Length: 386
Image 1 (cartoon, rainbow, N blue to C red):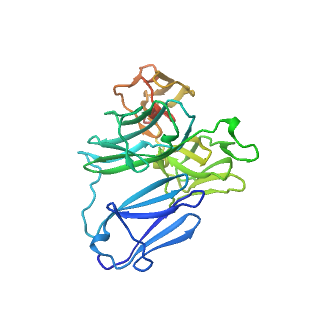
Image 2 (tube, rainbow, N blue to C red):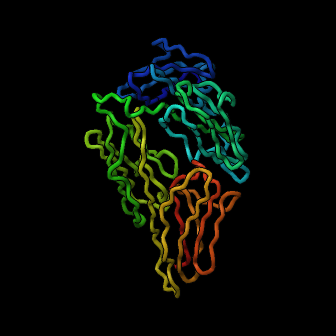
């Protein structure tokens, strides 16, 4: 409310150390050291404090971090207590959510390059792209395509130095907004790398492994990353960043490279695709696994047979634009109900996706004209009353 105090926390990384500036609804926010202060909390953490709040202090607050190598930004909506409540997902519609976000990449100079993400929204979201904070428009070798299925793409016919920077995809409909951000840089050819510098992009060894555990037990995921300089670590579940809570914790030891994620007393909702992403200024990599949770059910003597896969799925690698087919086979009495998932998200037959399940237990998933948004972990689930 008016007259109160507000604090905003942000974490930023960069070498050299970035400088920060703030805006409210596009207006520069003066850090006067009295009513408005900015405190360095160390380790990349900053705290913006606004005392004696005024009417003009409410709105969209944007933080811009910048150093000699580029800039990045984030923002939040700051409303007065009792203001308009955001709409939530209901049968009529729901706000945008990026199932496949953008990610940082290094591109060889002169190469054809695609930036791609995937958004889910109802009604369809209005998509806007920005480059280094300015709206990105088609022209001069740049094409923009946003499909009704939610795929959002930028095509650059020849990636050059002028294309280095931060790209943001912003989605908006009447129920809310969402955005995803990535930084693109030029890949350094090996012959141009300075041998004296012992620096390299992250690599995982060992990676994550699939887990299957009973409801109520503890989930423990572990992997190890090697990187110089030290990697920045982020965990994702079903394509979304994980949030630390009383049950979920994750750790990273920069000295040993060990990354761990722990979930206490797992529930059915903890099932899904988990991914650990490691990045530094030389590049990024990731490792992923599937976690399945066996829920506790009352033991009832029933005649029949539990579902059992007689043929499992196998990894597939295809080029953009090709067709991919995934096959498996299952038995069970009664015949199980079959569901397909990608990165923990339920799949349904659509224009490019076809699901076929025969009475004899053969299961087939076909995806035509594959794009970057189709990449991920696919899971076939079979269930019957047993």
